[in-house]
Length: 267
Image (cartoon, helix red, strand yellow):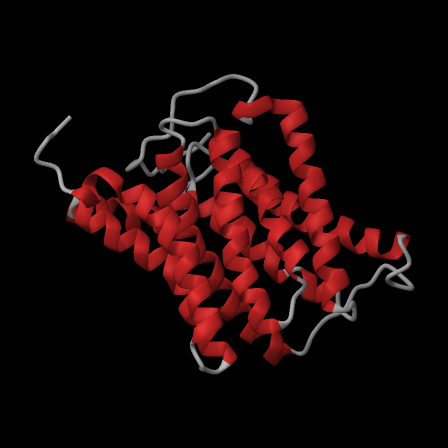
Protein backbone atom coordinates (compact mmCIF):
# COMPACT_ATOMS: atom_id res chain seq x y z
CA UNK A 1 0.00 0.00 0.00
CA UNK A 2 1.25 3.50 -0.80
CA UNK A 3 1.71 5.15 2.62
CA UNK A 4 1.96 8.55 0.96
CA UNK A 5 -1.54 8.35 -0.49
CA UNK A 6 -4.01 10.91 0.77
CA UNK A 7 -7.21 10.23 2.68
CA UNK A 8 -9.26 11.02 -0.43
CA UNK A 9 -7.18 8.67 -2.57
CA UNK A 10 -7.77 5.82 -0.10
CA UNK A 11 -11.45 6.47 0.54
CA UNK A 12 -12.77 8.23 -2.58
CA UNK A 13 -15.48 5.63 -3.27
CA UNK A 14 -16.69 5.62 0.35
CA UNK A 15 -16.82 9.42 0.33
CA UNK A 16 -18.83 9.29 -2.89
CA UNK A 17 -21.31 6.74 -1.56
CA UNK A 18 -21.91 8.74 1.62
CA UNK A 19 -21.99 12.27 0.25
CA UNK A 20 -24.07 11.69 -2.87
CA UNK A 21 -27.38 10.83 -1.14
CA UNK A 22 -26.73 13.15 1.82
CA UNK A 23 -26.11 16.22 -0.33
CA UNK A 24 -29.05 15.35 -2.58
CA UNK A 25 -31.43 14.98 0.37
CA UNK A 26 -30.12 18.19 1.93
CA UNK A 27 -30.84 20.08 -1.28
CA UNK A 28 -34.40 18.74 -1.36
CA UNK A 29 -35.10 19.44 2.33
CA UNK A 30 -33.30 22.69 3.09
CA UNK A 31 -33.01 24.83 -0.06
CA UNK A 32 -35.99 27.22 -0.58
CA UNK A 33 -35.73 27.19 -4.36
CA UNK A 34 -38.15 26.53 -7.26
CA UNK A 35 -38.81 22.84 -7.86
CA UNK A 36 -37.11 22.84 -11.26
CA UNK A 37 -33.89 24.27 -9.83
CA UNK A 38 -33.91 21.84 -6.89
CA UNK A 39 -34.28 18.88 -9.26
CA UNK A 40 -31.43 20.15 -11.46
CA UNK A 41 -29.13 20.64 -8.47
CA UNK A 42 -29.92 17.17 -7.13
CA UNK A 43 -29.22 15.57 -10.49
CA UNK A 44 -25.87 17.35 -10.70
CA UNK A 45 -24.67 15.76 -7.47
CA UNK A 46 -23.79 12.20 -8.71
CA UNK A 47 -21.84 13.38 -11.75
CA UNK A 48 -20.18 16.37 -10.08
CA UNK A 49 -18.91 14.30 -7.15
CA UNK A 50 -17.74 11.57 -9.52
CA UNK A 51 -15.67 14.03 -11.55
CA UNK A 52 -14.34 15.86 -8.48
CA UNK A 53 -13.29 12.73 -6.59
CA UNK A 54 -11.77 11.17 -9.69
CA UNK A 55 -9.70 14.31 -10.18
CA UNK A 56 -8.57 14.44 -6.55
CA UNK A 57 -7.87 10.72 -6.15
CA UNK A 58 -6.75 9.60 -9.60
CA UNK A 59 -5.79 12.66 -11.62
CA UNK A 60 -6.79 14.41 -14.82
CA UNK A 61 -6.16 11.41 -17.05
CA UNK A 62 -8.74 9.37 -15.14
CA UNK A 63 -11.23 12.23 -15.43
CA UNK A 64 -10.70 12.18 -19.19
CA UNK A 65 -11.26 8.41 -19.22
CA UNK A 66 -14.46 8.81 -17.21
CA UNK A 67 -15.86 11.51 -19.47
CA UNK A 68 -14.83 9.59 -22.59
CA UNK A 69 -17.33 6.88 -21.66
CA UNK A 70 -20.15 9.32 -22.48
CA UNK A 71 -19.20 9.23 -26.16
CA UNK A 72 -18.47 5.53 -26.69
CA UNK A 73 -21.54 4.33 -28.57
CA UNK A 74 -19.87 1.86 -30.94
CA UNK A 75 -21.69 -1.22 -29.70
CA UNK A 76 -23.14 -4.22 -31.49
CA UNK A 77 -26.62 -3.30 -32.67
CA UNK A 78 -28.18 -6.27 -30.86
CA UNK A 79 -27.51 -4.53 -27.54
CA UNK A 80 -29.38 -1.47 -28.72
CA UNK A 81 -32.29 -3.77 -29.48
CA UNK A 82 -32.06 -5.58 -26.14
CA UNK A 83 -31.81 -2.31 -24.23
CA UNK A 84 -34.79 -0.77 -26.01
CA UNK A 85 -36.96 -3.89 -25.71
CA UNK A 86 -36.14 -4.29 -22.04
CA UNK A 87 -36.82 -0.68 -21.06
CA UNK A 88 -39.97 -0.26 -23.17
CA UNK A 89 -41.18 -3.75 -22.30
CA UNK A 90 -41.03 -3.03 -18.57
CA UNK A 91 -43.23 0.05 -18.99
CA UNK A 92 -45.67 -1.88 -21.20
CA UNK A 93 -45.95 -4.52 -18.46
CA UNK A 94 -46.48 -1.75 -15.88
CA UNK A 95 -49.31 -0.39 -18.06
CA UNK A 96 -50.86 -3.86 -18.29
CA UNK A 97 -50.48 -4.32 -14.52
CA UNK A 98 -52.35 -1.07 -13.86
CA UNK A 99 -55.20 -2.37 -16.02
CA UNK A 100 -55.24 -5.83 -14.39
CA UNK A 101 -55.46 -4.47 -10.83
CA UNK A 102 -58.16 -2.00 -11.76
CA UNK A 103 -56.15 1.20 -11.53
CA UNK A 104 -56.75 1.95 -15.20
CA UNK A 105 -59.94 1.24 -17.19
CA UNK A 106 -57.93 0.21 -20.24
CA UNK A 107 -54.39 -0.37 -21.46
CA UNK A 108 -53.44 3.17 -22.36
CA UNK A 109 -51.58 4.85 -25.18
CA UNK A 110 -51.33 8.62 -25.31
CA UNK A 111 -49.27 11.01 -27.41
CA UNK A 112 -48.46 14.23 -25.55
CA UNK A 113 -48.21 17.63 -27.20
CA UNK A 114 -45.03 18.19 -29.19
CA UNK A 115 -43.87 20.92 -26.81
CA UNK A 116 -44.16 18.53 -23.87
CA UNK A 117 -42.34 15.79 -25.79
CA UNK A 118 -39.44 18.13 -26.51
CA UNK A 119 -39.26 19.46 -22.96
CA UNK A 120 -39.38 15.95 -21.51
CA UNK A 121 -36.75 14.77 -23.98
CA UNK A 122 -34.29 17.44 -22.85
CA UNK A 123 -35.02 16.98 -19.14
CA UNK A 124 -34.86 13.19 -19.16
CA UNK A 125 -31.73 13.18 -21.31
CA UNK A 126 -30.06 15.34 -18.68
CA UNK A 127 -31.31 13.00 -15.95
CA UNK A 128 -29.90 9.94 -17.71
CA UNK A 129 -26.51 11.47 -18.45
CA UNK A 130 -25.97 13.19 -15.09
CA UNK A 131 -27.06 10.23 -12.96
CA UNK A 132 -25.42 7.46 -14.98
CA UNK A 133 -22.04 9.17 -15.19
CA UNK A 134 -21.93 8.90 -11.42
CA UNK A 135 -23.73 5.63 -10.62
CA UNK A 136 -22.66 3.35 -13.47
CA UNK A 137 -19.73 5.35 -14.85
CA UNK A 138 -17.91 5.93 -11.56
CA UNK A 139 -19.32 3.93 -8.64
CA UNK A 140 -20.35 0.55 -10.08
CA UNK A 141 -16.98 -0.50 -11.60
CA UNK A 142 -15.20 0.43 -8.37
CA UNK A 143 -17.69 -1.41 -6.17
CA UNK A 144 -17.31 -4.58 -8.24
CA UNK A 145 -13.55 -4.71 -7.62
CA UNK A 146 -14.17 -6.25 -4.18
CA UNK A 147 -17.86 -7.20 -4.29
CA UNK A 148 -20.17 -9.37 -6.37
CA UNK A 149 -22.24 -7.65 -9.07
CA UNK A 150 -25.43 -8.31 -7.10
CA UNK A 151 -24.17 -6.81 -3.84
CA UNK A 152 -22.75 -3.85 -5.79
CA UNK A 153 -26.11 -3.36 -7.48
CA UNK A 154 -27.95 -3.50 -4.14
CA UNK A 155 -25.63 -0.91 -2.58
CA UNK A 156 -26.20 1.43 -5.50
CA UNK A 157 -29.93 0.68 -5.44
CA UNK A 158 -30.13 1.70 -1.78
CA UNK A 159 -28.25 4.97 -2.36
CA UNK A 160 -30.10 5.69 -5.61
CA UNK A 161 -33.35 5.09 -3.74
CA UNK A 162 -32.38 7.63 -1.08
CA UNK A 163 -31.71 10.20 -3.79
CA UNK A 164 -35.09 9.45 -5.35
CA UNK A 165 -36.80 9.92 -1.99
CA UNK A 166 -35.43 13.46 -2.16
CA UNK A 167 -36.96 13.86 -5.62
CA UNK A 168 -40.20 12.48 -4.24
CA UNK A 169 -40.22 15.13 -1.51
CA UNK A 170 -40.07 17.72 -4.27
CA UNK A 171 -42.76 16.41 -6.65
CA UNK A 172 -45.05 14.56 -4.24
CA UNK A 173 -44.23 10.93 -5.06
CA UNK A 174 -44.93 8.30 -2.39
CA UNK A 175 -41.69 7.44 -0.63
CA UNK A 176 -41.87 3.63 -0.49
CA UNK A 177 -42.18 2.73 -4.22
CA UNK A 178 -39.90 5.67 -5.02
CA UNK A 179 -37.29 4.07 -2.75
CA UNK A 180 -37.88 0.47 -3.92
CA UNK A 181 -37.87 0.96 -7.70
CA UNK A 182 -34.14 1.83 -7.89
CA UNK A 183 -33.26 -1.51 -6.25
CA UNK A 184 -34.81 -3.41 -9.15
CA UNK A 185 -33.54 -1.00 -11.78
CA UNK A 186 -30.02 -1.13 -10.35
CA UNK A 187 -29.94 -4.93 -10.69
CA UNK A 188 -31.33 -4.83 -14.24
CA UNK A 189 -28.87 -2.13 -15.27
CA UNK A 190 -25.95 -3.96 -13.66
CA UNK A 191 -26.88 -7.03 -15.73
CA UNK A 192 -26.89 -4.85 -18.83
CA UNK A 193 -23.62 -3.18 -17.79
CA UNK A 194 -21.89 -6.54 -17.40
CA UNK A 195 -23.17 -8.00 -20.66
CA UNK A 196 -22.02 -4.93 -22.60
CA UNK A 197 -18.60 -5.03 -20.88
CA UNK A 198 -19.15 -1.82 -18.95
CA UNK A 199 -21.00 0.28 -21.50
CA UNK A 200 -22.13 3.56 -19.97
CA UNK A 201 -23.91 4.29 -23.25
CA UNK A 202 -26.33 1.39 -22.78
CA UNK A 203 -26.95 2.41 -19.17
CA UNK A 204 -27.83 5.93 -20.29
CA UNK A 205 -30.04 4.63 -23.10
CA UNK A 206 -31.93 2.29 -20.77
CA UNK A 207 -32.38 5.03 -18.18
CA UNK A 208 -33.59 7.54 -20.77
CA UNK A 209 -36.10 5.21 -22.43
CA UNK A 210 -37.42 3.86 -19.12
CA UNK A 211 -38.12 7.42 -17.92
CA UNK A 212 -39.37 8.77 -21.28
CA UNK A 213 -41.84 5.99 -22.15
CA UNK A 214 -44.34 6.37 -19.25
CA UNK A 215 -45.74 9.60 -20.71
CA UNK A 216 -47.13 7.48 -23.55
CA UNK A 217 -48.37 4.46 -21.59
CA UNK A 218 -49.04 5.52 -18.00
CA UNK A 219 -50.71 8.82 -18.80
CA UNK A 220 -53.66 9.59 -16.57
CA UNK A 221 -52.63 7.34 -13.70
CA UNK A 222 -52.24 9.05 -10.33
CA UNK A 223 -48.56 9.46 -9.52
CA UNK A 224 -48.77 6.99 -6.61
CA UNK A 225 -50.18 4.19 -8.79
CA UNK A 226 -47.79 4.92 -11.67
CA UNK A 227 -44.76 4.74 -9.37
CA UNK A 228 -46.02 1.55 -7.70
CA UNK A 229 -46.50 -0.25 -11.04
CA UNK A 230 -42.96 0.66 -12.12
CA UNK A 231 -41.53 -0.42 -8.77
CA UNK A 232 -43.33 -3.78 -8.86
CA UNK A 233 -42.26 -4.53 -12.42
CA UNK A 234 -38.66 -3.45 -11.78
CA UNK A 235 -38.37 -5.69 -8.73
CA UNK A 236 -40.03 -8.62 -10.53
CA UNK A 237 -37.60 -8.38 -13.47
CA UNK A 238 -34.69 -8.08 -11.03
CA UNK A 239 -35.76 -11.27 -9.21
CA UNK A 240 -35.99 -13.08 -12.55
CA UNK A 241 -32.45 -12.00 -13.44
CA UNK A 242 -31.16 -13.15 -10.05
CA UNK A 243 -32.90 -16.52 -10.48
CA UNK A 244 -31.46 -16.95 -13.97
CA UNK A 245 -27.94 -15.60 -13.46
CA UNK A 246 -27.20 -15.75 -9.72
CA UNK A 247 -25.16 -13.25 -7.74
CA UNK A 248 -22.76 -12.67 -10.64
CA UNK A 249 -25.71 -11.65 -12.88
CA UNK A 250 -24.15 -13.60 -15.74
CA UNK A 251 -23.96 -17.28 -16.62
CA UNK A 252 -20.16 -17.36 -16.69
CA UNK A 253 -17.79 -14.98 -14.95
CA UNK A 254 -16.02 -12.98 -17.61
CA UNK A 255 -13.03 -10.70 -17.30
CA UNK A 256 -13.74 -7.89 -14.82
CA UNK A 257 -14.76 -4.49 -16.06
CA UNK A 258 -11.80 -2.19 -15.61
CA UNK A 259 -12.41 0.99 -13.65
CA UNK A 260 -11.06 3.30 -16.30
CA UNK A 261 -12.00 1.23 -19.29
CA UNK A 262 -14.49 2.30 -21.89
CA UNK A 263 -15.42 -0.46 -24.29
CA UNK A 264 -15.68 0.89 -27.81
CA UNK A 265 -16.60 -2.21 -29.78
CA UNK A 266 -18.85 -4.60 -27.89
CA UNK A 267 -19.90 -7.77 -29.65
